[in-house]
Image 1 (cartoon, rainbow, N blue to C red):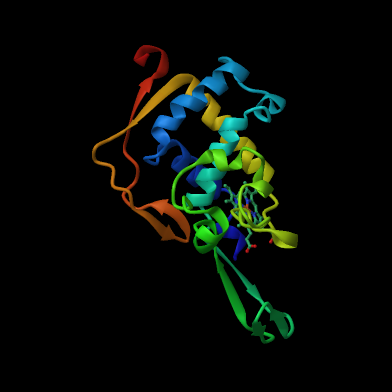
Image 2: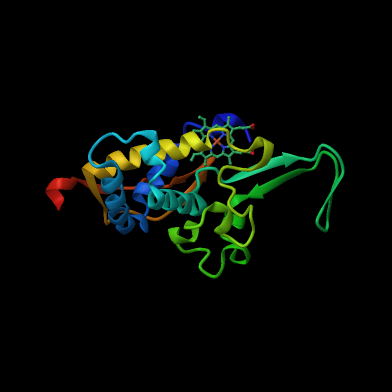
Length: 199
Ligand code: HEM
């Protein structure tokens, strides 16, 4: 995958999804409590962000179902046997994240449901296969920006939740689309209110 499709567009896109997609709106109220408990109303330091366990789980679950990067390609440098498959040198293999991230074999019967609690014991324990979560790729060519991406999403989400509450507009149409990165096809109209006033 060309690196120009990675990095900058990915985090905002994932963040937008986190903040705005339908299943998130109610959950946001819950994780706000954690944000206010750990960060209070200030700008969170990096070590405080690492304490945001529930926020982390929500972001991971968002990346599982709606991660911005949708697939990755590999070209075989030599003939290889992969399980039952013989892959000849030069053959290009595309790994579709959605197939793996929504596989009932790996994630159980609720694979298509938004359930952040599956990450409560960490990424490696979340599914029946150690590498079932590949939103940031894996191995030598895995995402070098993943820690930064998680940190910046936690930071922005914390700042937003300290100040605002969100509700989804009735005009919202759930239509995630592949525009190189996963994006909401018709945008995500939301109603944003100052948090303190809306309590
Ligand atoms: C939510 C945000 C992000 C997601 C979902 C994401 C996802 C990915 C994935 C799946 C790959 C592997 C692609 C492949 O193997 O073909 C990758 C690679 C990469 N990412 Fe990210 N990324 C994110 C944020 C970032 C950020 C913030 C940066 C830089 C500041 C970054 C820089 C890179 C680079 C340079 C590579 C290529 C690494 C290599 O080929 O050795 N990414 N990313």
